[in-house]
Image (cartoon, rainbow, N blue to C red; front, side, top):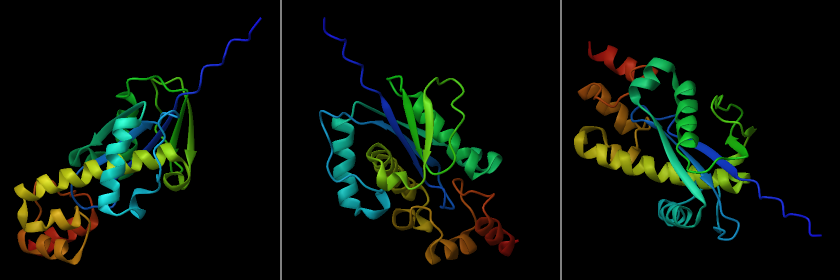
Length: 200
């Protein structure tokens, strides 16, 4: 009599981008890779060129078993703090998956509570470089957020969001001092508050 083949574990990699910027949402991604359709070259999104990130993002979306994105708004960042907003975005990403995971691997040393999830949860420091599914999550989250900031640049052209993606570059800080904050600035972040105080 043949032993029944064990069902392969469904492992989700989770990562977020956008903790450091002064503007825009936090974006998280959850990815379940398909072992039958591997994606070569996965690594921390910060170590890839924009073109390579875009190429890999397309491959991940096409070849993964499942993926989903989650967001935390500027208002949530200001009311909760950036850590809690990031955890919320990651939880939303996992909740939107169309599969039920057995294991959730989260980049870093903090993970959401995932109160409605029965899966085991692991944190992996440096996981965006060492765990392929987390690397994949970091890539599609980064590509998504960069595209969003490109669109927001058209609504708020004074701040250079197409170039700085909301990070505190000299150009961005100068624009804050000159024009004040716009609707997508995180007012709870010290450089934004300082710039606004300087204009009052």
